[in-house]
Image 1 (cartoon, one colour):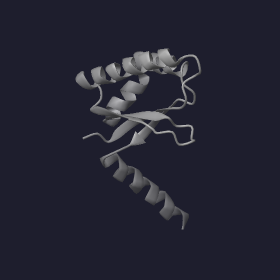
Image 2 (tube, rainbow, N blue to C red):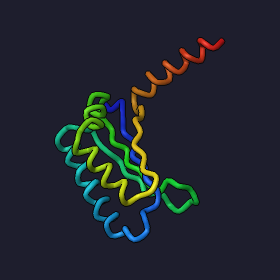
Image 3 (cartoon, rainbow, N blue to C red):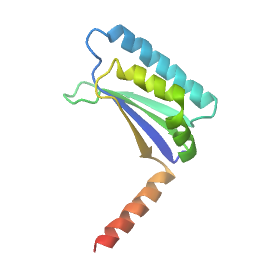
Length: 118
């Protein structure tokens, strides 16, 4: 079961690049599906947010082991695709996340630090 993830969030599409944004989005979904098929990630989930007045318009959550996520972050093809997407959307962010059993480890570490403050 996945204990780590990458959260890839994005904001508004740069005006005038809407058609390219659809193309890059579809390519990204295909790429992530290939990563899953090749066993480089466990799975992924997509979300497109309804208009809400905030900066975040959607996100992908790529799940895997800590080793899989670390390898993906270091992968040149992954980095190239992030740079490509950054040219067509505002406020893209790629953030490591804890999921599944990783949450328990993260909270244990946090609790230990909180306890040290007393």
